[in-house]
Image (cartoon, rainbow, N blue to C red; front, side, top):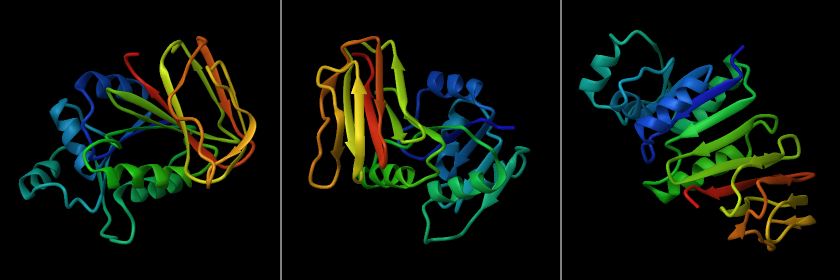
Length: 214
């Protein structure tokens, strides 16, 4: 059973060190279209390449044919490559943890779309976006966050839709069951004041952003 799935999208490429570490921790790895270039740069091979593959050159596609891993080309222009990958995972794998690299940076519209797609994905999956500058975790009523070892780090909470019963512990300014989202957005530029920080909600979907290097 694959419990931890690594997906690499075509946004800002992760460092070789970050990709290598995340791949060692994963049970199954997926290159999402142009995210394959990050694997190639690190001299690593994913278990699966998926997407419409329009981000890869003919030369790249020709070399992939002989690489010996699974390829799923899906020419559906009504879904993003990230959505294609999530749909494939839901139909073929059992997962508790989804780690997404390359989902941030480059084009802001792509980054926001990736977060929107993640915000409505299966609430039982713990979804984490990671790169070399920041770490983002989705929180739902089924997947609360308990963060360790980030005392004094900057932390922000961003709801993409209405979230009820939002509670935090260990921050400079804690939330005590508030409803946020819609016309009430609070949570930017908070600070971790404890080595253990908790974020939970009763309903909805929100993202916790943690700055690295703080």
